[in-house]
Length: 223
Image (cartoon, rainbow, N blue to C red):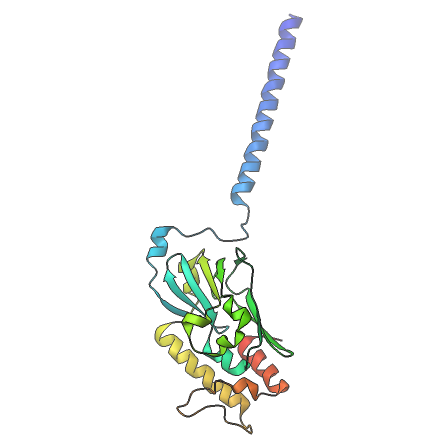
């Protein structure tokens, strides 16, 4: 009888141990499954293939050109190069680095003046424009084939593009920004706009430190 009793106790204890072990494994699995991810899961090919090609702009004055569903060229807009002035240096992220939409993607410098700009979308950096390191003045020229800054493999392209401007909305936004810039700088001893109504491409070279700080705060949310 004692042997039978000991056997039953041992069997019951083993059952408890197995049940507890199973519960621990289940809890660990559940936590891993529901743990917050530092970066978004890549969209499926089917989702990405529905994205139309084109150029989209972020309110931080950066743009994204969809080359393929899994490749996007990224750069700064003409407004940035005009109001910043002659760009003397650019700091770029490392290859393979992951960035999120709205995070700082690169930094441009001119003397003591500097500006960090936000990534227009999320993804992994697959290529950087090394030519800009040797010749950052290319950023002051309107040549998308030369002045792109990063090539990114997007991770949530469809979602990110919904936060960007394009088409008629982008045109109206650019016009509004230009009008706000003129209003914030007038009166000045130099013209803000050139013939034809466009912002002077070298306007930033004429801005005082105080004027630049105001532009950086009002239009780039810097400082």
